[in-house]
Length: 245
Image (cartoon, rainbow, N blue to C red; front, side, top):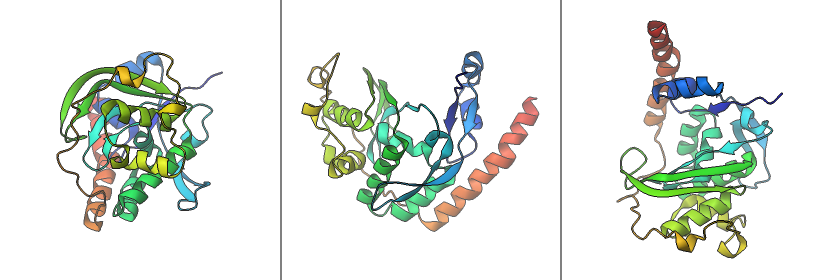
């Protein structure tokens, strides 16, 4: 028997609550796909700087992991691609603590994201760039029709290819820069393209954020974020479910 599930560890509320709020309940019901809230477990990794990471055991212990990122500009990390999307495999409130612990150094934060992706090691990454999100994302910005759907078994190769298509300097994207620095990001000559080559798909005027904002979260923000999560998870979502039932 093959067991399938859709999972997340959102910063606020539960995975199910987020899915319902975004209108996915009927689709998941039709597919018979359960929604799983990820739970944290500490894993030893090969990294010298991040040799123990608290990651979601459901992803780490899965037989197959399919990573489904959306192409977005990002006011903290320039671009959100496949590697950044795997930050979802860090338990909910641990994300905020990582912003506190590593956020003052974008290079260290990028390295943490790369090591997380390397530990999760997704079997397949499918990036949705059909309608991208440019400008001051992920909260603001504008939708942009690109018609791009990218897939790879190597999440680092996929991210490197996308910055080439968007004509963004890899060094200004902390996740791509960190992957290059660690020697796990192939250049274009080491990547095979069975359908279209990136040079056939170049985007000349992709808009990055107008101004980057700090990655780090101060302690007051961490505390507010924690209380907000607890309120949504244990009061707002249960009350909403009770009223709907």
